[in-house]
Amino acid sequence: MLADGIFKANDIRGLVSGPQIEWDSAGAEALGQAFGRLNPDGAMVVSHDMRDSGPELMEAFVAGATSQGVDVTVIGLASTDQLWFASGWLDLPGAQFTASHNPAAYNGVKFCQRQAQPVSPHFLVELADLSRQIDAGTVSLAPAARPGQVTGRDLLDDYAAYLRSLVDLDRCRRLKVVIDAGNGMAGHTVPAVLGPYDLDLIGLYLDLDGSFPNHQPNPLVPENLVDAQRAVVQHQADLALVFDGDADRCFVIDERGEVVAPSTITALIAVEQLAREPGGVIVINTITSDAVRQIVSERGGRVVESRVGHTYVKAKMAEQRAIFGGEHSAHYYFRDFWGADTGLLAGLHVLARLGHDHRPLSELVAEYTRFVGSGEINSTVRDPDRCQAAVAQAFAGQGEVEWGDGVKVTGDGWWFNLRPSNTEPLLRLNVEARDTVQMASLRDQVLHVIATEEAV
Image (cartoon, rainbow, N blue to C red; front, side, top):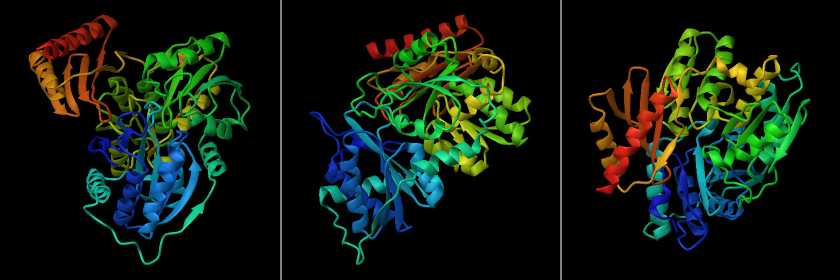
């Protein structure tokens, strides 16, 4: 089974349990056959996260791919950035079975080409069309004359060693660090990567559990950060690192228990990367703080803007040979990591920067914070296009209106962006202004227009 709605802009994601199942192992096998037929390389690497449905779906996918003659390297339990590493390290296209931050009833797949490069939107459309036809029985693919071979391989130690080779933590002051894995894949990767360092680690929810018994694995939702914020203060820690379910994102909390905005972390790492390579390109998305643009320009770098989403940012990273990229959602991309996103490498850079500085994190990041942001505010609406148009019309005389990744309105010292989610039936609002009063006023005006439009 493969429901139409599971095919998203950047990946596949849908319900695999409950009363409204959207895809299953038969659908995963059809997906594997389609990927095998469309894959020109004849080989690939696959893995899965800690969700209960992961092994069964991955095995069905592998059966489909090998039926088309594709050789498959299975690295088993892995974070998404571990799969990106495997793709780059082994020079193979890849598929990671994960639903990222979604609740336990979901699963999905993230794909990449060789060297962890993104698949194109056209490829995803082709994959969706062919796999649905196979699943429906309207297309039948003949088995390959030589079935593909399956090889198991454990790359966790290689992945950990590679990340450690990119960041110098050996001469840092000793830090006390809270790690909140949210029962997700960071519980698998963080001990392997950080274990050899002289750090005082305080672990929260490191046990792998796809039912997420403690909190949902989505650090964009403030309530999912509360435990780590409390632990930082309680243990007088220097900072906390909070990961999403598949550990490709990392949120940072300072010593006061305050969340450090991902745009601030983007600016901090960008400055470090530009010191190593002056004049380099930094990729940001449409809702990254203007502070990043200003700081990168001041340090002699160049900013290139991308649409929101890992597929788009990775494509822009490759196109521009960018040294680093960051998104508002705490995805961080590194040229040294095949242009792919890795939450743990970003965390290592923050630890290194803090460990070589005598100041607390709140003081260190203050120089990279120049505006006040709303954070991402989600609204469930019946007609996203109509709501966006209504907001654009309401603000037409107040700022410059741009359509692209949703609608963005820019004024003197402020902007907001309203865009539909790639994975959920939501409109996402982000607002930035010079001060809290102006930000709150803009935020409330936009939300009022949305509410009024929904009431019609």
